[in-house]
Length: 230
Ligand SMILES: [Mg+2]
Image 1: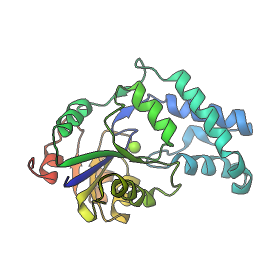
Image 2 (image 1 turned 90 degrees about the vertical axis):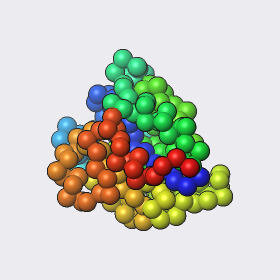
Image 3 (image 1 turned 180 degrees about the vertical axis):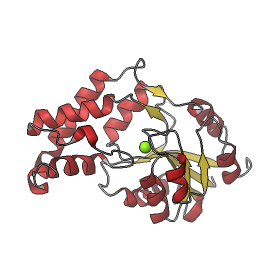
Image 4 (image 1 turned 135 degrees about the horizontal axis):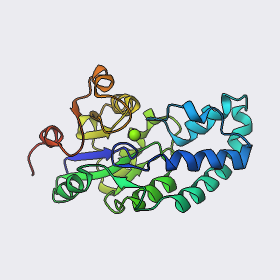
C-alpha cells in the first residue's frame, strides 16, 4: 500500500447534532457537579481529555483533581452517548459513504482514523452513523491528550499491522478544523481540510492545507493528491 489516509470524526465524517456535547456535559455534571463554561466552549479539533481538563480548569478544578477521575467521566460519557445516539440524530456527512466505498476498492490505500475522540466514543458515533468497519487502524484522544502526537501513534500501529509506517506525506490527515492541519504538519503528513464542520473555509485557508475541500462530496482534489489507482 502506498498511502495511509486518516480521517477525523466530528465535522469530517459525521455529525451528532450536538448530542455528543450534551453527553459529555452530562458526564461532567455527574462526576464533578459542573461542566464548566460548556455553552461557549470551542470544541473543534480538541481531544476529549483536553476538553475535560480545559472545561474543569476554567472553573478552578485543578488537573491533579481531574486526572484520577478521568476514566469515571468517560464511563459516564460513553453510557450517555450510547443512550442518546441513534441513526435518527447521527448522520454521515455528504459524500462520506461514497468516498469510503471508493477508497475500499483501492489496494494501494489504507484507511484509518485520527481523532480527538476516545476510542470507545468514536466507535459509538461511527456505529450510529453507519460507518463502522471502514477503518483498519486508528489514533485516538485516549492514546494522547496532545493531538499533535497522534500521527506518530497511527504510524506505529500501521507499522505493527503492515510493516510500513507510511512516512512523510505518504500519510494524509483529513479534518475539518485548524488543529487537524497543525497535527498533520507536526507529523510531517499531508493536510487535507474539509469545510464541512464549524470552521469556515477562509479560516482553514489561512493555515494553507495541501488540499481544501468544501465537503467530502467533492473529493476530486483529495483523489488527485493520492494519485491514480495502483
Ligand atoms: Mg472535527
